[in-house]
Amino acid sequence: QKEVEQNSGPLSVPEGAIASLNCTYSDRGSQSFFWYRQYSGKSPELIMSIYSNGDKEDGRFTAQLNKASQYVSLLIRDSQPSDSATYLCASVPLSGSARQLTFGSGTQLTVLP
Amino acid sequence: DVKVTQSSRYLVKRTGEKVFLECVQDMDHENMFWYRQDPGLGLRLIYFSYDVKMKEKGDIPEGYSVSREKKERFSLILESASTNQTSMYLCASSLETAGNQPQHFGDGTRLSIL
Picture 1 (tube, rainbow over the protein chains, first blue to last red):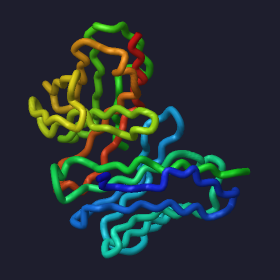
Picture 2: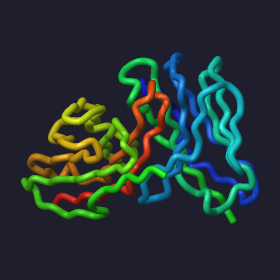
Picture 3: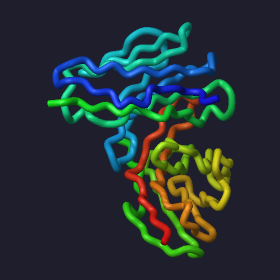
Picture 4: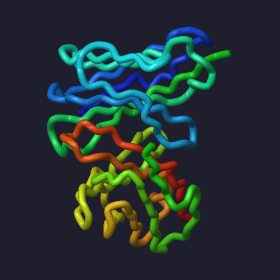
């Protein structure tokens, strides 16, 4: 059973809209969560980290964590065509090595001009 | 900013060759990782290292080996390259602090085995 699940998409939103990306995880002991953005043919780039319940905002990005429901989300406000990419959710699971990350398979986002 | 540098962006090798992929990080990170990424399969961990000369197998270590002789450098070795090892290879590093640290990736090496 995959430990981090994401809707693979593709998700399409019009320019200027809010894009909502969701991620659920199975390891209830997971403590740390990260969102990466990956453009086609490029490597993943860290865009957000979140460690505690609630919202964390950074510019147009907001990460939300709900440990009771075991989900993490990423909101992108005022979406731009340059936000079109695959977004990977990752967690540090309680089981196994704390050094490793468990990655979801990614959600492909397309922002339409 | 963290800088993870992979020696080649594109590499073409022949079946049976011994292939070396090099990765260097400049942030004194303890942990280093090698992944491969294939369409539809996501990121898969090959090996990782948490200290000099230390290594642990990831999910798909078969056909690969690694070397970490210095803290900043982590090498992935394909002992005898095969066509099913054609892939994007990604190196990453992270700081060793109670597992709360993200990984930072290099630009990747797109390896083709002919």
